[in-house]
Image (tube, rainbow, N blue to C red):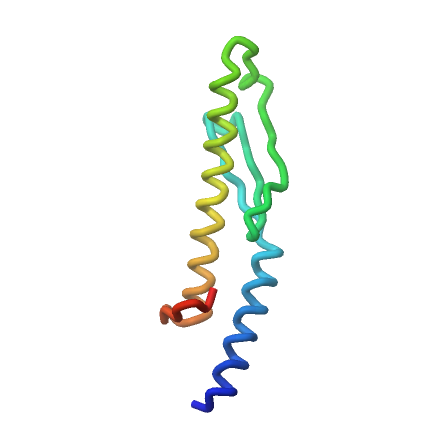
Length: 99
């Protein structure tokens, strides 16, 4: 395969991946769904929803832990989704430094 053609394909794959990342939305939750965090494929936090029952003025630390857990779960889901999409685009072939 021509190196120029290969580079062009790599650039196209990167552009497709960036588009998918911009469109991707995932949700992580904690505390049985009492706290939900929504994140995009660039791992930007888009929103947090907190159920009233999760708000206890006497236990702020628990709420803080639930928010952290929900955000971390959303971040993990972004990673999993992006790895799946990269695998689908490259046919499972590992290309170092591609993404």
